[in-house]
Amino acid sequence: DELRRTSEAVGKAVLSDRFRPMLLPRHAADVLAATFQAERFEAAAKAIKSRGEKASNGASAAISGGPRSAVGNYREIVNLFLGEIARTPQSPSPSPSGQTCSYLDAKPVNPHTRARAYRTLLAGGTSNSPPWLRRRVGSLLTSLAVVDLRPVVDAFVGDASSAPGSDATAAAVRLGRVLCAPPSPSDRTAESSDADGGGGKGGYYAELFREVASLLDGTWSAAGSDGAAAGAAEARTDARFDAGPATAWAVLSNAPLPLLRRHFLPHLIRGMVPNAEAAASPARCVRRSVRRICALLSRAPAAAGEDGTAAKVCDLLLSPLDPSAVSPPHADASESDAGGVSCAGVVSALGQLIRISAAGGDNVVRCSSCAEDAVWAARMIVRAAMTARAIRGADESRGERASQRNGGVSGEDAKGGSPR
Image (cartoon, rainbow, N blue to C red; front, side, top):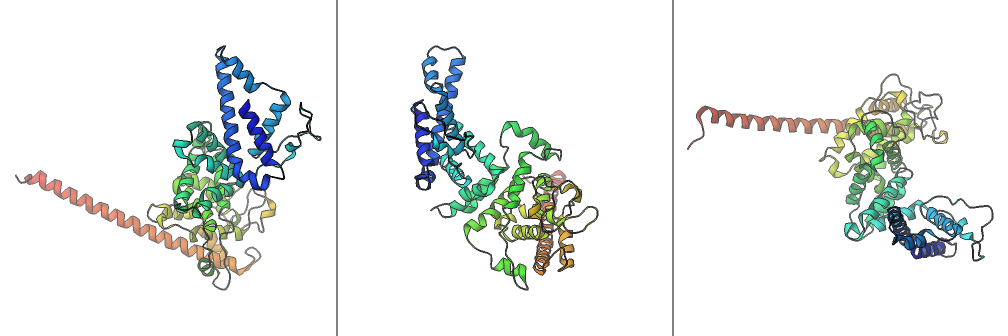
């Protein structure tokens, strides 16, 4: 009960308008750690009480006792730190001491502060962070990532570039590995159905890849007659600017290709394919889809060609996609400038890019720079396909030569035996 009251008092202070700008970023992790510890003590006390041990009566009463209004105020504080809107009455309710609880009208903690607090709680490693705390924070981090992934990327990847001795690329790889891991045992059924190509549109991976595609927005700028080349040459070098595409490549490296075809590809080329469902919102604009592909291809890491991720992305962009499958559940009509490029039957990202480059400045493409970006993206896809094919051919030829050498040696051994 004392830990709960202390975390409530500190949370009330840092959420106030007077101290919030200065104290909340510094002590959000401390308040969360205290509340999680209080929850663990309360759960342990309830478990002991349920087993009928008399020694737990005093501890259980101290933790779960107290006025109902005080417990409710503590829960509201916890909800604010978890990003939930406090359900407060129109007028502040008086506490038993006669003071009004006006601090419940405070705004929830913003996603960036929560993400940095989660990073602080996980920064200690397994030696300083107990397993139960890592599981609790990991669950909250996963819930935040499927709603707003950019604050998580800024906290774990963007901030790593400014920290001494930290590698932003390695941080992106670690984050991509964590995001592709199963979030909890309760979601394994939905994940298996997603991986098999079944249902589960509202599953974890469907929401994750929507956020991964949004990381590519705003990371491509092209201007001039040779727009795509200018955009690649004038790309900003700030590490925070590269954090989004680097994380996207890390996720693509860890996710299997069938999962990418089902959930990531529709979000990537949504604006280039007309929406076949009448009840769905309009698709994203052609320009945004083209720029997403350009941003993905222009920010490929150096290790993508070595570990096979570049070949996987190339296969993804060459994969056929039924236009009727592009019906985004979370699309907004205000985000679309066009209904997509006309197509018939099964299409691919490369095919739609070629159609856009041939369309020029018509009423669908709207500007010549979009067509120039499409030409650049199509060239990059073809070049990557040729490189991947050459690498596969070289690997196959090396394997054949190795098998021939092994076969020749074994044949000589079988014929004449090894010399003694």
